[in-house]
Length: 377
Ligand code: NAI
Image (cartoon, rainbow, N blue to C red; front, side, top):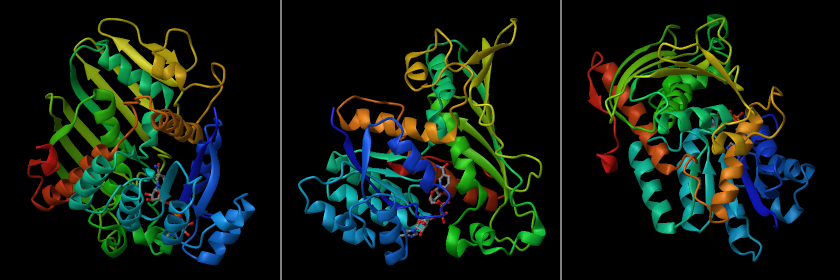
């Protein structure tokens, strides 16, 4: 099978997420790195792209140049990843979808709900794939958890509790560091700080494993470092369409917690726990029974969990290979195989609606509000 051609916008040298995409896209041999506009400084981006092996005529200075260059080629890219800062996602994703390219967009997909709804419509009209990089949902043991819920191994899910709380912005003496400060500045980050940055991964994960969608929520936001305009800590209670009760805590000032992303799902006949810092293990307790450790790579896993494990049991795979799993699903989807685990534009706009609803709720003393985007009401 010939390789698909892959391009990337953003993710330049020294960026946080760029390396994970390059490792992920190239890990399984589905894609060849063919084009890029990697940096906001055209010359720096061109030079870095060539250092990474791109041909000079496909290492572009900016994304508009890349769009027209790729559109004009017979051997145009099959997929473009948008890994630029948040405020640029909408414009770039929309333009590439309209031009007939498949897109993987970083989270958050857009800044507003209206933009998100437009992306859903543009993707539908174009018939192209618009995926959003909720990469934690592609860990094999998260896929196992979802399959267990779908297969009734927990009974009806009563409760989901999730945290994405770390302490890396907890040092008040570092709050003015420009790499930290922008995240809490509405001019740069939008309406929400920590909830839009990390909380939406946890919210997506709750929907993903429970196979259900968030319907209403009530939020409490706090800026525990007073110079911060946007929240660095949030507690969000929610209810899902199927009645499941949800609790979510996200924080960037929880000193001592490192990555700090975990989820517990409690059903009528059992409970599950997964944590990103021990991603190979899924902890399962049937009601009245012993707690069991289900291990990535062991026999008898559901197909999705087995398919997305590569190395032998007990060898860690980790974050870049979770991103690689998104690319595996994308390659399958581009080649015509349905992969319903792939987070799509609908998931992207649901997250944006939840962010804006949480902001409103927090301002309104924690009022319970409808968290669904209007297109899904
Ligand atoms: P960063 O600031 O470390 O890097 C951004 C890169 O994009 C830089 O190389 C910059 O030169 C380039 N860039 C900026 N504007 C550009 C433009 N107009 N055209 C081409 N290149 C441009 O940012 P980081 O942390 O890598 O975040 C990028 C995106 O990835 C964000 O949307 C963020 O939310 C998301 N992200 C997602 C994660 C996940 O777990 N899915 C984890 C970390 C980031």
